Length: 136
Image (tube, rainbow, N blue to C red):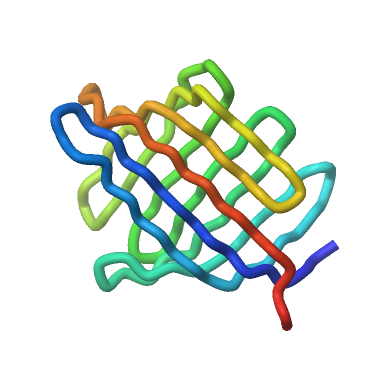
């Protein structure tokens, strides 16, 4: 199964001693289902970088993978630390996530997690992707 979808991505970043940052992105993408998993793919542009994003959705886990202008693998498993990575140009960083909330429905994916960049706590992040059937 493969279908066009409209995507609304909202990210909230909470850091100690700072106001919450809210970012929103709207894009068109493709939702594919195979072997009991759903794959959501879309393109985004960040700081003059073209990025291809794939979100792999399982029943109890998820992985956000980005390629193009930057390379990133961000895995999520409820209440368990997971290790990913981020590469931008020559720089490479280890990322650690710990998901406190992981919700998947037919039209929504939401994850709330702590993020560490190397050994430094980077904040609590909340990412929600809503996807509705597209017109293509």
